[in-house]
Image 1: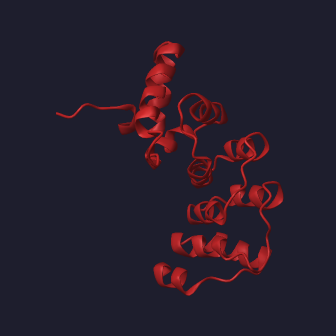
Image 2: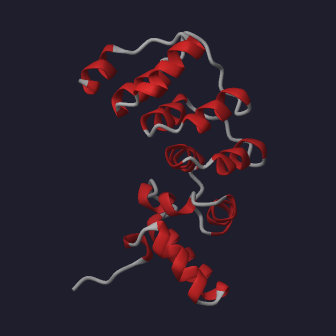
Length: 166
């Protein structure tokens, strides 16, 4: 039977681990799991970032102490999971500029609050040339997000997104 690691359990179970064991031990095993998931010489496994974006404190710690330094992947995972406080930290303290794929990830996952934050405070420009938000909403089947993006920006949907939405 293969060994179970922290990457095999969900965020809810990870929270239980942190409640039941000493904080120092929990941080040590979490850091080891994140280091295993985020080797410094290769592209980090995206699953390693999924648990890192559960809170700003964990994201900052994973970024600074565990070598999960790919801010782009961290931003995408935070956008997918509604991690506005992680995005806030990335933008204001880690001085990260968000790429359009972050909008796309948030739209695909139906994270309207994240999109509103990105366009109001996160340095993302909302105009009719921005199509990734509409593409992500179409790909994710997020009709409410698609309507919001049309109304807010007048953006268009690419033919690729329409095909994948169908």
